[in-house]
Amino acid sequence: MEQRLVLAFALSFLVLVIWSYIYAPRQEPGVPEGADIQEEKKEEIPAATKSPVIDLPVLQDIGEPITEAQEGALVREKGILVETPLYQAMFSNKGASINSFRLKNYRTTTDPESPPVQLVNLENNNRDSFFIGFYEDMASGEEKVSYSVSEESLVLTPESEPKDLTFKVLRSDGIGIDQTFRFYADRYYIDIFLKITNYSDSLCDGSIMVYLRNLPPEDKSSYYAFSGIALLLENELEEIKPKKLKEDKYLSGRIEWVAYENGYFISAIIPEDQKKGDFKGSLLPSGIVKAVYAAPATSLQPYESIPSRFILYMGPRDMGILEETGHNLEEAINFGFFDIIAKPLHFILLYFNKFAHNYGVSIILLTVLIKILFWPLTHKSYKSMKEMQKLQPLMAKIREKYKDDKEQMQRELMGLYKTYKVNPLGGCLPILIQIPVFFALFRILGNSIELRHAPFILWINDLSAPDRLFDFPFKIPFMSPPYGIPVLTLLMGASMFIQQKMQPAPGDPSQAKVMMFLPIIFTVMFINFPSGLVLYWLTNNILSIGQQYRIKKGST
Image 1: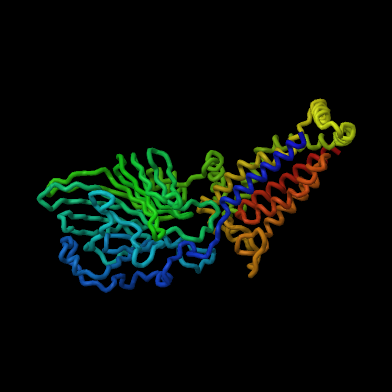
Image 2 (image 1 turned 120 degrees about the horizontal axis):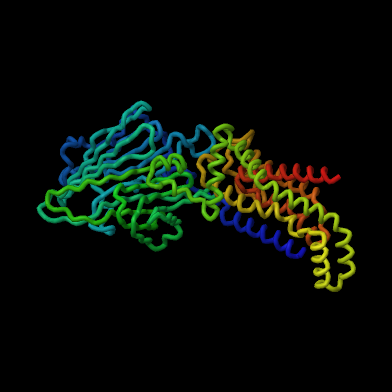
């Protein structure tokens, strides 16, 4: 039975080690979150008072869509700056596309002076991360034409009513496209009103297609924040990582939305018409990830028009904001296998923070609540351990008497446990019952933007990142950069050591060795875990020490 106990510990450690290895952040030299690739993109966001026009000939009035001949005369792009209290976006008249989208309320690092998060991570000559077109099929798409534009810039203040930006073009094949983007001062989503008109004398077949493109950053700093393409297909979430796009991915069915996710942020297109559509995901040779949504095919009679509407969301993966946007966009926040545990914990954590205004304090309160819920179970476990301590002399005699007959020794020990009604595995129960909660919190910390850059106290200024005091210029074994003193992790290891000393010493030497190295093993494993997760485990250990002390004091 004691061998099974050692095996139970070993399996628990193996699960944690594999988990930490798979999901540990790989901090490779590359583009930091929200940063652009070219040096030119490191410049400050242009002020709303500056002209966002890039040296172009004056376009005709918006009432007349630009024609093929006029398009050929255009050699440079025209940038249209849109600024709201929440973001600054740069549109281009080439394809009515979005080339830049910066979120004002989110920074790339914990430094308040760091640049705002940039959702577009593409090179200068290939920067169109979003555009809509009308094409015969997906293979013939991406032919972007130049549009006439209704405004040179738009600025919305907190008191502003919604404002529109309209793009118009008449293609050489007689297809006219009108796109109107409606912006709101207090919302991250943008309404898109689309009208496709056949100005030719012949029937025209095609589909409205929406393109999302981005370049995943090389630096993955978050612990388990999904990066890649996601879509809600037939009420089921599909997540496709870039490495799974070695071959193009085709899906078809009722698509509620298609999105590109990068850690804590998301760019999603939502068709108002929720009929059957087609999806294609690709990984380009340049490393750019491309997602295409194709609406159902349609046939346009001469001089016939079809209207359509989409919602474009570009902003944080915040549960509350996504729910307000509607269309089940909140399903993009996926806590995985432990979703049934993680979502209630996430809700409670946000609820506590309404009063605590500090997510570190909220994690402590959540830990106390979890401890209270598990109190009867852990109390019974500690009582069992106390009874095991009383049996140590009898167990030692059995081991000595049957040291040459292992099977008989196990039978005698089992009879002893049965006589005194003691569970020999009760000692590992406090750790085992925490594993699902541990994994659930792991996913919460990696998926909840509320905890991104959330400070606790003193040097702990990001609960979603590992705890580091100071910044050493040299490497530390087993530690991912940045290198420093993991104070919270060391305190957690010390608390495990104290907790272990309060427990009865195992009679079996092999089990005693496992228990001796337990605090060291956990300290090494936790050294790269998010500080919020370490705070949970430390708080739980402290509460367990108090519980054990109370049981020990009550039995004396």
